[in-house]
Image 1 (cartoon, one colour):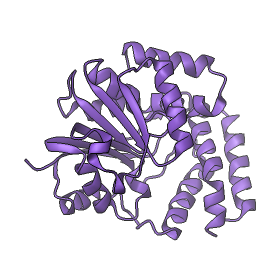
Image 2: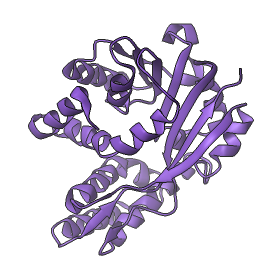
Image 3: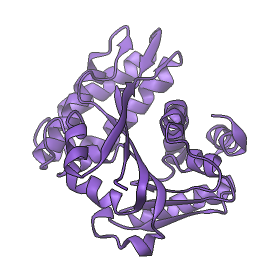
Length: 279
């Protein structure tokens, strides 16, 4: 992930004082290369307008800003007001004066309010949380011009993230996270069936691919999974799929593995879809 904005992200990861924000920026940085590769398949160029749905405190907004440049426009939307406030601070830190973030639910968003139509819409780890992915993709497509692009990157339930030597707790936490989502009404294997959801939404799938991202800094990579489990703990326990005792045991096992001689640790396997709206 070259360019000025990427360098600023890297510097903040090293020097920032907000531990949680640094964690989230580390995730964006870790996935930057495959994210950029997926987005560039659309032929994106300076001057385009792009929107990210479910952007969180940064998401791919830094990459999109690099690609569209100051002559372009980048917008992020997220449901949580506190997250949007944080994202605005991050964009200011990165010097992205041509980006904006707004509190919105894509399902009820007035396209004009968001500044639509956009040339491209992007989602990552967003559709996996939706009760009806086809309906959500339809809502996203309303923000995009005819013949425009939608890029999504979502993690599959299987295979889980892995390390060498294996860390069974890492694989178990991934299973629990999906079981908790299913208990709250998210359909099973919704990511695996996204091509069908895209067809239902009237979109043309022009590319399908996937990736997982191994890291030699295994402890750092495994720590991101541990922190994801911490963030998901209330939902996992509250849904009844695991007890607080089991979650604590998984966290202890992951902490112990981080202190051992792991050779590598990998992200989950992400499904890449590049789609076009009808003309």
